[in-house]
Amino acid sequence: MFKRIVVGYDGTAEGRDAVVLGAAIASATGAGLSLVGVIPPMLVPMPAAFSRASLRTQAEAGLRHVRDTVAPDALIGTVVDLSMPRALRHFAERWHADLVVLGSEGTVRQGHARIGRRGRQLLYDAPFAVAVASRGLHKQALKLHRIGVGYDAGPEARAALELAAELARGAHAALGVRSV
Image (tube, rainbow, N blue to C red; front, side, top):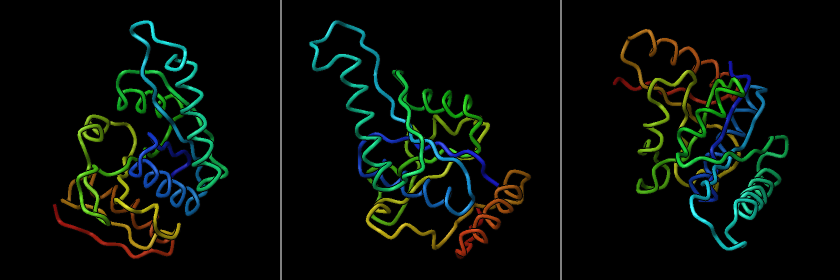
């Protein structure tokens, strides 16, 4: 099962959804949880209010706030990179993460999830599992009720189904299987 979970948090409601899902999975599996914020590098000189140190301080304050309210045992970290998917991937690989959790694309309806462009970039050839939190999850109780998995009878799908079943058992949640 999962030992290390990384959650990308960007201060948005979708990022908070990801933190809630990551915390629920960590609670169900006993995994370590790390919340990561990505800040852009300074390519041109900027006023002090927009300096890298200021942006890092703001990102860390947001991470501490969401950690304290949703996932008190989580570690926090920031990464400087132009690409959020690349930064999350490198952080997850250095931390030997089993799972990276993202928020859903912002255009999907509440209660639904869809992987966005950044998620697809992260997913390509990833050495870890990727979970996408449904929109509005942060407004609900912190408990996994349903685990869904796509299945096409391939080796990856069999591994995903086995993992989803184990997670559903650990969280006392229902398991839904969809043919892909």
